[in-house]
Image (tube, rainbow, N blue to C red; front, side):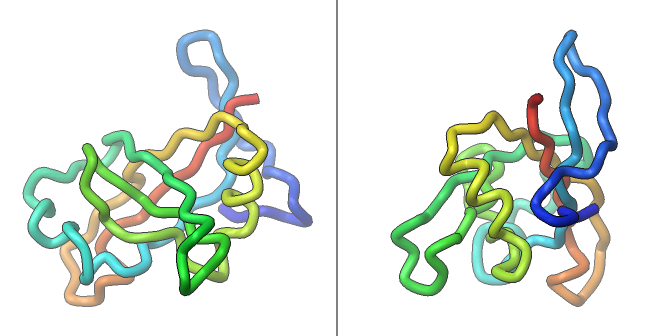
Length: 119
């Protein structure tokens, strides 16, 4: 899912009494350049991920890094990171998890991430 006009789509689910909306799903950009391949055997759908803003990133001022247990897996793709970067910059509570793994030779198909926003 993606954002429509800057607003989160209304897919919501409760978790421990809180309401979360799915903001977007995306493939991890740069998976082949970071720790992803080495960590592949340990990754599983549903595992939590950490989103880290890299406002000082020289290649993309809206960069959002995707980490698993302290290891960099890659980034939200540049064309898809504006909304999540803005939410993080505003101090909103976001959660992320591995939505899908695929054993593919194409690094863009390897890992899909789901981002949720606590509302």
